[in-house]
Image (cartoon, rainbow, N blue to C red; front, side, top):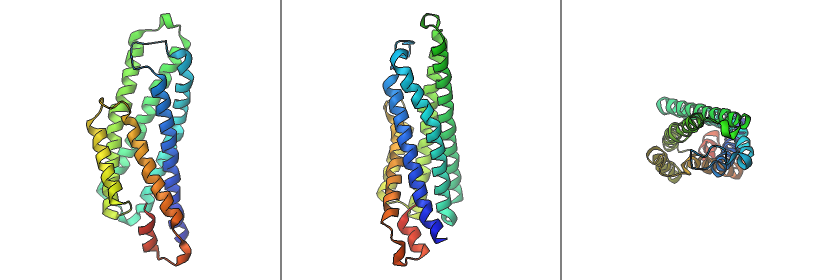
Length: 227
């Protein structure tokens, strides 16, 4: 039991850090490679398609790390888990992951279509539809689910005191930013992985500072180590 309590927080932190780093790299590569002009069909393919393909190939690994992060966080909460907020926490996390994969699949299919066709023969309507669909899934619906995930996580953190209060309140503010500022902040998609990175680094540092040999009880270790 003691070993389980010591290893689970570190696993959660490592999974969260891995998810954040991979997702940030993917989003930055896509943002820098794909032009803002939705009618620019082929100009960016010559130099940018490799970066976008790399970003899309990184997303499945980011999703696996995020799924692991959800699992070990729920395992860490254990008996302290509130059923209502835990359901919202799990559901929003899985929906975010599903939408992330869906947008990546649409974008990947669009890249394959553009790569196999001549620029002159590309149907602008198909390209515009695929790009708009990818944008709506990733930057509207997925970000809303990310905001709900952040709110439920922060609520659980306040109820169980597994995170500092300032970190939970910061999560509320950032979640409202995701829910209310869709379309106004081009880099809003980075808010969620940066927040996960913040709490993951906190968990990892807290876990590394913990000294099991001091004879702390399991209850005290559960409070001191966070998630």
